[in-house]
Image (cartoon, rainbow, N blue to C red; front, top):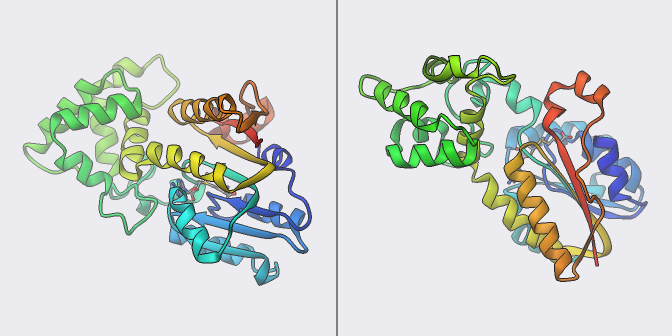
Length: 289
Ligand SMILES: C[S@@+](CC[C@H](N)C(=O)[O-])C[C@H]1O[C@@H](n2cnc3c(N)ncnc32)[C@H](O)[C@@H]1O
């Protein structure tokens, strides 16, 4: 999907491209190869550790051909103002978390690798998953797990968390995943996903305010795209995909966008086999009118 996403963007020599989720710069590297010489890549990420890896990965490119910025992509207007960037020729959003973040137990995203319940992309954000799990009121926790996890057993899971909280706090991803498995495991027996998958997704979305960030960013990026420039968004769950689909439709209705993907592009069977995480990926692209 990485190559397909870049094909949709059509980066040319000299283009100015925003990689709004630069991560460890896998996409950024390919984009820079296409826009150099003369082009400029703006890479944004909320995660300083990933930006340090990106910096290392891009070190063979001319320093003046890219900039890496720490922040939330929904604040792109503020970040662009500092650089005096008024227009861009394309934007890529590869949403969610990277393998680097998922596989690092200290970041607390994975129930497969136990670590402190953190889940922050941006460590300067004071709210950690630990705070949500251990301090939220029953109603708030139920709403988070139901709305952001689309988890039908939200009441049962919240009940088990509140029961545990009576005697001790829940500190690690493993403690939480085991507790969820005890609460609903049997009900997930016939399903392909781990019983904790949906709750972990819900917590991550809540901690990083992911859905509001995405909504805000799509409307903002449209103000910066040149006419004919494209935005390409890869999402990993239905809540994100719904926002992308709805936002593109709204822009098209107002004659501001041409939708390039009537149906989302999904990974090939080969890619799904090679990279299990790509299974749920959906890509949508639109062009500024
Ligand atoms: C799937 S990874 C991107 C991987 C990247 N395309 C690459 O090739 O290495 C998503 C990245 O987006 C970042 N991210 C997610 N939401 C963000 C937001 N609202 N603002 C800034 N960065 C965000 C995450 O920290 C993560 O590094």
